[in-house]
Amino acid sequence: MRKTVFTILMCMMCLISFAQAPHKPAVMFSFMNNYVILTESICDAKGYNGTTPLCVFVKYDKKTNTAQIVKVEPLENRETPGYFKSVIQNMIPKYAGLNFDDHDQVDCVSGATYSSRAVKENVKAAYQYFIEKRR
Image (tube, rainbow, N blue to C red):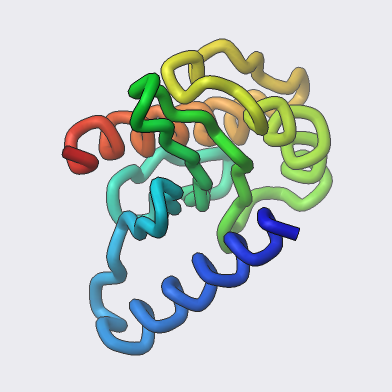
């Protein structure tokens, strides 16, 4: 229930941001030590058919100074649906629950190498952006 409320609030914040600034959307939103990072304007990692932006949900624990990836969701892209479906099913779920510092431990999907690499680059960009801007 708590994750559902968090997701709804973050989506509402994203929509408000897009409505207010259609030219350049905000990159990171925060709410009670939870963050949503949109990689569309901070990373131009290309898969097979173009960029593959992501929405990275992160929970930050102030006591331990650690961040955990809650989930990763793909945003609109032009990747080949069959190959990208494999990335969505076999790679993206592996980020959930992962310590943000360990983001580079997820392996690529065989047969969808370009898309997988682009996802990894986007998560890395989200991590670097989080580290720089959170403080």
